[in-house]
Length: 133
Image (cartoon, rainbow, N blue to C red; front, side, top):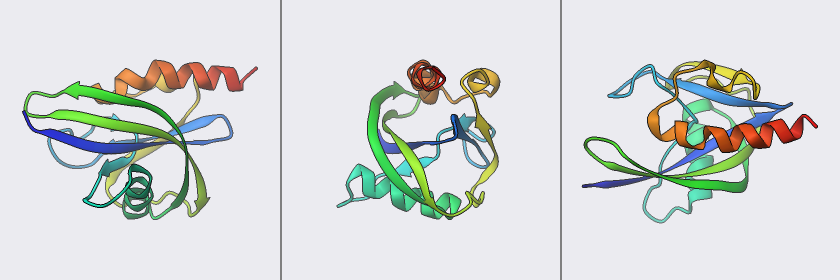
């Protein structure tokens, strides 16, 4: 089975995280953390900065690695590195996504996450709950 290596940005601001809804392809309408494929010669962090600039016209600061998610979709294996990220410059314009939402820890399950993204939601929610202390 083919492996696709991607990166995902868990963008946070004022106690909320940014979720996007896919506007195209096989997983159209599913919710995910923005990001994309790592190109040859890129580090995961460089790929994430490039992808967020392309998808959301925003510059981000890539922070701590959260986790690597391994998930088998029917036709490929996804290897996804997730990172905490902050906005450096820009307003998160939706250039490729259908919709987006800022979610609190209590709202994080209010969208229909794609299967691979669902795996990391409990870990992200736990960290968000800690922020509220």
